[in-house]
Image 1: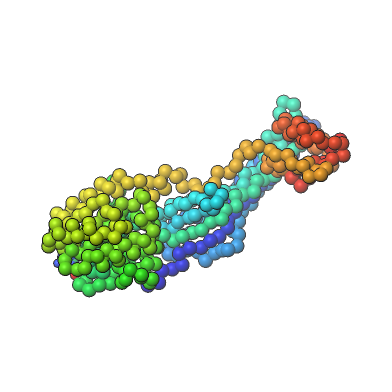
Image 2 (image 1 turned 180 degrees about the vertical axis):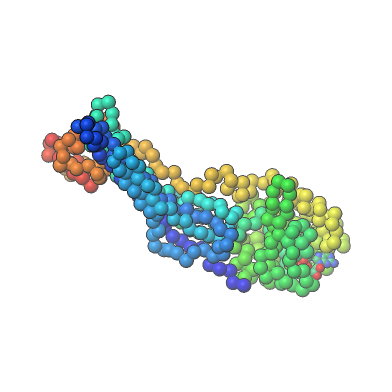
Length: 423
Ligand SMILES: Nc1nc2c(ncn2[C@@H]2O[C@H](COP(=O)(O)OP(=O)(O)O)[C@@H](O)[C@H]2O)c(=O)[nH]1
Ligand SMILES: [Mg+2]
């Protein structure tokens, strides 16, 4: 078995919101009806959903994927329709990583269950219609607002199978036997090494929860580079890692070296939330085996607890299982974090960012997302529209800030691609 491609990188963007409408009521017996321009619809979102039937990540990217545009608002107060949402279907266990570490916006979300879904790029808000610009001092609003651009997000999808408890160890040490004893798993158990070539999974079911436990294929040598290493990296960092050590006649230091290599390669050792446990299998002389393991621990396997276990001993297996259930319930697992997160992965859209004024020669730039959207739809050649826009800019304190720049008559004001001359 070859592990299918485990990551794709792509850029996605929510749809732009629809423009608001500027219109007035037309009724035969009322000569000047009030404003009735409706708001634009929201742009569509880009959503990632985990589906049971999907096995591979979609073949997409590196291009840009954009969700549908929101429709423009209409007269008679009609709001535009929301843009079409794009849904990317991915395998259960996919991890979504958005943003970058540098920007401090890096976010991760693991889709662990079927139908779990996350909005990765939100559509832009629809622009306001002139109806919403009506005020006690402006009964004939001529302004409306263009739709907002959707969120632009860089994202990486990583196919990661979800595991709560990992079982690792040297070949033939009894990992499969332990998995079968503890869980619903039904792996092949055989008296020769490397029986397990894939991730062998099982569940421990309680009334409250289901714990996912898996056995990873063993390393042949501490410098393993093949499939066992790929499989090790194909899952998340488990909450608990059990290292099985065969305390029969086998060479324990060699087993510990293999285990150590697995922990190093997986990177789990770096996660302070992962708890490392040891199961000492086939222990004829348990005291001696335990002492030996403690002394020769090469460092990484700094287990907090060792359990003795022998295949066929149901009471020992039961003790281990109860302990795992107890520990799993207490650990701050990734799974709990995911439920705390309300599934919406979207970076919160900036709202209420203060305006900025910059100057380049005789050009004064007004930088303000909201006013740029209003200016975009405003016909500056219409004196009444320009006057209403100035009034709004004054209300927001922007004209005052412009005066402070020492503006002179004849200087240019630039806003949302439109230019105005300062009189
Ligand atoms: N005698 C004895 N044999 C065991 C014990 N645990 C596992 N085995 C045997 O060891 C062999 C390898 O076990 P398996 O679970 O497949 O090991 P894995 O390769 O680590 O998954 C099988 O024949 C098991 O029946 C044990 O506690 N005592
Ligand atoms: Mg096995």
